[in-house]
Structure formats: structure tokens, C-alpha cells
Length: 258
Ligand SMILES: NC(=O)c1ccc[n+]([C@@H]2O[C@H](COP(=O)([O-])OP(=O)(O)OC[C@H]3O[C@@H](n4cnc5c(N)ncnc54)[C@H](O)[C@@H]3O)[C@@H](O)[C@H]2O)c1
Image (cartoon, rainbow, N blue to C red; front, top):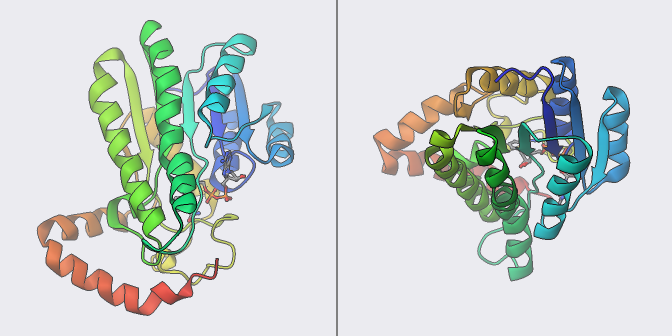
């Protein structure tokens, strides 16, 4: 899909990857980029750079995603591309509280479900649309030190696959973004983390990779090409792959500080 003249919504647009996506879409000539975030001030800063529209939203609440979609459709026009990008990270394993598990589940997974629930019927009716969902390389390879992140990002990849295979015949394209470390608020103070083993990318080349993928209408966005090799190793020999991940766990699991 070409981005020129398109109406685009980006969640998590106040910062990091979401901000870079919004700016890059504007460069491509989008008609309007809606910058949605919990942090309205940050979303307004992004929007101000591109004559965008800033909207406050908590993507962890279905009613707010529904209201976001309804407002954009009414005030701006039919949404061509919806980027479910907002996400959170927390350390820990099964011992993390139920409240934390539910919070990350709602933000990293259900937000994508709710966006599809309220947008796919509209897109189907008009013959198509595009969903770009931000997961992570952790959704393909897991996350040392954070079960809630690794698990929710796997679910996000699974949902994106399901949406792609189910609605492809309705003209709805789906891509899923799976980077390793990217410099952002999320990774500030974690520059030496396990996800940075292959280097930390700036958000701008990640946005470039998304634009290229959307243009080609392919599924997987892998700004760190090494990830494909790790996926192959995992499917070739699961046990050897777990052995390798155990080594990483010994070296890196203790490094989470928040
Ligand atoms: N930075 C990385 O290394 C990396 C790697 C892989 C995937 N990701 C994913 O990329 C996405 C963007 O993260 P980032 O790295 O740009 O981090 P970031 O923290 O800089 O940006 C995330 C944005 O999401 C917003 N947000 C958080 N919770 C929200 C909510 N409930 N409702 C609305 N907005 C909310 C925050 O205010 C923030 O502006 C996330 O889904 C993250 O999991 C990041």
C-alpha cells in the first residue's frame, strides 16, 4: 500500500517507535496522521511537527479504542492504516501479580484485539485496509527476564497471523513489527540488555523498515535481520535453542532494574 493521502492512526505516538512512525508517514505524504497516546502532551508534540491530530487514549480500555476509531472516522475520514503500537514491558515471571499480568495483557494483546474488533467490519465494508501491529522479536524468540513481555508478544504475533489469514480475502493486509532493541523510553537504562546483543537501532530505521514492508504488503517486519536466523535455529532444534537461551538467561536475567 502506498501511504500518500492515507488516513493513519498510530498508538504510542508520543515517543520512540510510534513517534518515528508518525513522522515517517507524514514524510510519505499521508493525508492525516492521528497521534494517539496515554501521554497527550507527548502526542501533541509529535502531531505539532506534522500537522497531525493528537488524541488521548488508554489502549488498555476497549471503550477508549472504540471511541478513538469512531472519532477519527467521523472527524477525519475512513482509517486506511491503524498501527497498534503502544506497549509496555515489565520484569518478572509467574510471581508477578495478577494485576500486572492483566495490565500487560490488555495493553500488549487486547488492544490489538479491540482495534480489530471495531475497525475490521468498517474496513471489510469498504473493501480493505491495513493493520500494522507492533509485537517484538520477543514474540518470536521470547524475552529473558520477562515472562509477561515474552508471553504477550507471542500472543500479539499469533493474533496478527490470525488476522492476516482470516481477513486477507477481504482485502485487509496485516503486518507485524518484531524488532530487537530500539532506542526509546522503554529501553532507556537497559542499553546493555540482552535485546541489544545485535545492536540497538534508532527508531527511524525501524520506521523505514515498516514503510517498506507496508509498500510491499508483506507480513513480517524484521529491522534486525539476525532474528530470521534465530527463528530458523529454533525450529531446526528446539532443545538446542532452549540451551542457548538458558545461557543468555544466566548472563542477562538479573539485569532488569524496573
Ligand atoms: N524499544 C524496543 O527495544 C522495542 C523492541 C521491540 C518491540 N518494542 C515495542 O514497540 C512498541 C513501542 O515501544 P517504544 O520502544 O517506542 O517505547 P516507548 O516507551 O518509547 O513508547 C511507548 C508509548 O506507548 C505509550 N503507552 C503506554 N501505555 C499506553 C496505553 N495504555 N495507552 C496508550 N498509550 C500507551 C507510552 O506513553 C509511550 O508514548 C511497544 O509495543 C514495544 O513493546 C519495542
